[in-house]
Image (cartoon, rainbow, N blue to C red; front, side):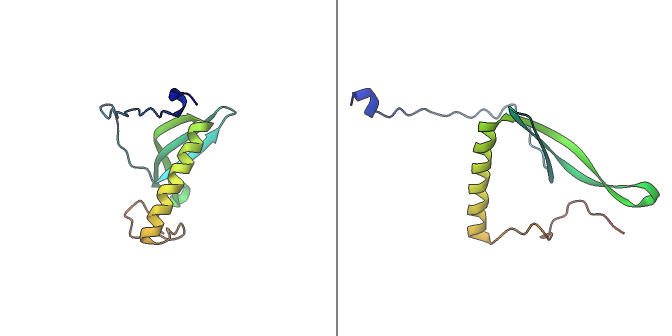
Length: 107
């Protein structure tokens, strides 16, 4: 084995956050093509519907488009983060609110 094959190069990663925008999302919509995954992040907002019946408006705040390899890396990373959180804090329930103050529909 040559010296170059056995050698591991370290690459320094620099993160530029100068153009970053931070937004909050309580909802995500996904769509796909053969080449890409489209993720729309936004807020479900209560609005009056027909006959004053409660309805939700999905206000899209950000769209992220990525290739399938990036989407798989994101899925793995999110799975690891959620697993670590649940190991420390218990299972996250998707069926009940846990003290959130997000939008609610009232009767």
